[in-house]
Image (cartoon, rainbow, N blue to C red; front, side):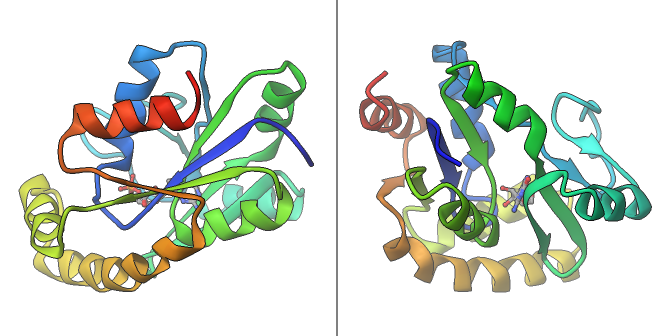
Length: 183
Ligand code: 5GP
């Protein structure tokens, strides 16, 4: 598959979602993939907008029917995946596509769409990542410790990416992305 696909990835809770939301607000012409996930919705999350919230059985069906471009088990608990058909349709329509996914998924997209651009969003330092994760307040201590362990390993992956954008100041990070994408 070829197409104008940009993968925005990086460690857990680095602010990838916030960066992508800000980028989309500035550039509504971008097409942003809505992932399927087996995790339960957080307060305020809307089915079809933030995620497609599906059951384990529905996720199994998506995999079996080749309905996902990539998927990953995240934090050893929930599965997340990019529905393939909407990406194919957006690419065919000549849209610029953005996928906000974690690292295992980014690697799968690299194999599947060799000309995709992979951008790593990095935290200014590990303490900041810890604070952001704690600040979210939606995780138990055990969930948080698990997410931090995942994040430590993820930081080492930056070198696999085409570009690294440090998310210290949101505005600056978005500006850098706009420049990278030539928007
Ligand atoms: P959260 O549960 O905090 O919304 O997301 C957890 C992690 O899953 C984040 O790192 C997010 O980027 C990642 N993620 C969201 N959607 C997908 C997807 O479709 N595929 C993959 N591989 N990761 C995803």
